[in-house]
Every structure is written in structure tokens, then in C-alpha cells.
Length: 290
Image (tube, rainbow, N blue to C red):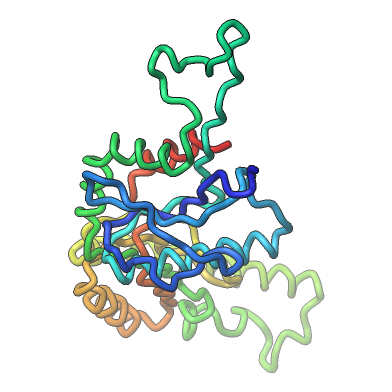
């Protein structure tokens, strides 16, 4: 039987006996902890077949959301977590074929462990890496990730200036202009709006980054979470902050918005600190996949 000879791994976390109680994951599967004796670390898993999940885009998106919700739940309970990416499986080690000479499993005479279960393989790896994993969990305890997107609305940035009626247009509107001239003047207005918003964005970037770094423990530039027509990017960042400093980040952004009406702020989180995790544990887990 190979139906449940693998473990789907969601995260590594501090060993708390009740951390997974009542938590469900992908497709509502009940989750459990694999505890690692001699360490302070556990793994959040569900029993699985040794084959990656495959599906259409909508289905995969739903699975990823379900996985994220499960990780968020145990993070709230334990205060620290090292999430895995989607589709990380640790498979059982297949038993080698018997040796034709003596009918015994190859490697047994040399003392090499054979036919290890997925749980044995996972606990052995965590035991080997316990110091590094435990250090990361301790360093991230009480921390969360916030994501901040700041842009300048080009129309608002030019309001009251060159964003109004076209310079040189006859009174009463552009009725006397040819279609070609109207297009040219529209392009000129757009160019001026981009230039004005770009200058403001450049000025705000350094100032805002410095103020955010004063309240965050770490800062990572990111790509925009989404783009909006008519807006110019100021910064897109992930912040690592202590939970008690979330309001301080919000105060910086509120002050910026009050001083600069053309600024648009998107403030997301708190989440587990996905952007600030050493991903070596993920790579090693992926090596144990089927």
C-alpha cells in the first residue's frame, strides 16, 4: 500500500502539544504534529500519498490558500513558524530488493538503515538541523511580516497645476483644435503628470524607507502586489516587525498620507514572516520528496 506512505509538510514550529488541535489543511484534511524527541521542534503535517498535488489554476490557488490558513492558525498559537512552500512531501524510503546471493535486504549487513518511514526520515533530518531550525524559530518569535505598497496618484499630484486645461487652448475648450493636436496635447499632459509624480515619488522613497526602518527590524524590497493605472510607485516592501510595533508602522503611513494627499497606501498583514526566513530547511525537505 502506498496510499499514505508520505507526509505533506506545512511548517516547522515550536513543539507545543496542542498546536495542531482541530486544525485542518488542504481539502479539510486533519493536521497533526510530528514531534522530534530531543529537540524543541515539531513538524505540522498530514498523511499523504507519495505524489504531488496537481490541478487547475483555481484548484491550486484554493489549496495554497488552505495551506496558508493552516500555517496562520498554528503561528497564532505558537508565536513562531517556518512555513514550507506548496507541495513539500517527505516520502518513505523504499526497501531495497533482496540480494539474490543471500536473500537479505541490500545494505543491511553494513548497518545501513533501509525502508525508513516518512516520519523517521523527517525526524532524523530535523534532529540533524535542530540547532539551526530552533535558532530561526527563536529569532522570529513574536515577529510578523507587514507588506507596504506606496504609490503616487498622478492626477492628484498634478491637481491645481499642469493637470488642468491645456495651455494655449482657446477659451471654451479645445473645440477649435484638430484631432491630431488634441492627441498631442493629451500626451504632453500625461508626460507632465508622470514627471511630476516621479519627482514626488523619488523624494518620498528615501524619507519613507528611513522612517520605516526606524520601527522595523528588517526591510525587504518586493515587487508591487498589484499595479493601478495612473499611479507611480514609491516603494513596495516587506517589513519584519515585533507585534507591538505594528501600530508604529501604521502611524508612519498615516502621517505620510496626511502630508501628501496624492499618496496611496496599501498596508497588509500581519502574516508569518515568509520573506525573512532562511529557506535552507525548505530545500532540504524537498530533497526527501518522492
